[in-house]
Structures are given as structure tokens and as C-alpha cells.
Image 1: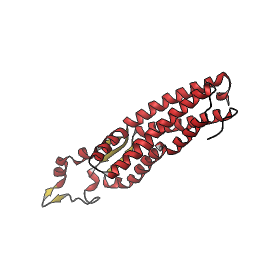
Image 2 (image 1 turned 45 degrees about the vertical axis):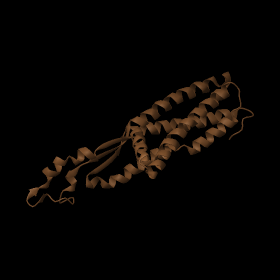
Image 3 (image 1 turned 90 degrees about the horizontal axis):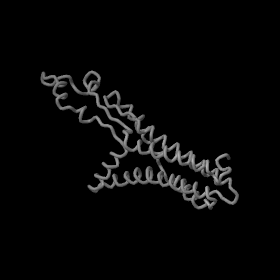
Length: 209
């Protein structure tokens, strides 16, 4: 390919450097921008559409419930960073499920994806200076299979779609811009892997992992 041509891969190094910057910016944005939001609307919960009666013992319930500010307390915008912080706090209280969730999100979804991009960047520089990239590609291949950022993005999409069934009850769960940033980071990750793999495999003496 053109990227694995002359100049010992200078074009490949430049392309992967740009990809790494885009990945870093996208992943950071995806971590700190909200990925999901929760909104509660009580209008659909009152009769005849919902289970809450309009009044009790002659007292209208709507003003009473409004004073409780339930929607304001329930409404939330959740980011991956805030979710990880919450999981760490719960884990400190001995919650085993939170420990498993933290491992899946923090290690498999985020850490392994970042490590894979770092290994791919190192492989590109090794390729640029004519060094063997066989073991680096093997490591990148393992990390790519362990990385679950794509699973995390799909999980957010599936949960959001499933929660749409509760909109009739006044519960609205929607995706936020952070999901698009995470998706962009994963697209860059996948593209970088296959570009580097293709370029290195075309060099004589470099075996696929």
C-alpha cells in the first residue's frame, strides 16, 4: 500500500500520529461528556393515563407531588467518568457487583483500548526504522480482542432503546453526545489497527500475529 512505501513508512507514521491525536481527543471527550440522560415527567403518571389519582381525600395530589421536586431530583446526565467515580465509591463500601462493573468499564473498555493504540503507535515507529514488528502486532492483536469499547458503546445504545418502553410512564432515557465521541474513538482504533497490520504484513519477513 501507499502507506507502507518509500521513506521507511514516513507517511504511515504521520497518518498514525494524526489518528492517535483524534483518538485521544475523542476518547477524552467521550469519558467526560454525558453519554446518557434521565428525565422524569410526571404528567403521564396521573389518571386516566397513569396510576396516581388526581386527588386523595379531596386534596389535589399534583401540587403536593410538585413540592417534592421528584423530577428535579431524578433528572441526571451520566458520563463514563462520573460512572467510574460512583463505582469506585460503591466498591469501597464492599459492593462486589460494582467491582466487576468497574473492571469491565475501566479496564476492558478503556484501559485495554488505550494500551492497544499505544502498542500500535510503537509498532509504527518500529516499522519506520526497519525493526521487526511481529511481536508488537501479536500484542496488539490480543489487546484488540480484549478491548471492549465497542461493546460499551453498543451497550449504551441497547439500554437506551430498551428504556424507550417506559416513556409512556414519564421516564425518558436518551443518548448524549459522549456516545458519538466514544464511537469516533473506536472507529479510529479499529482503522488504525488494520492500517498498521496491513502495512507491516506487506513488508517481507513480517508475519501476521
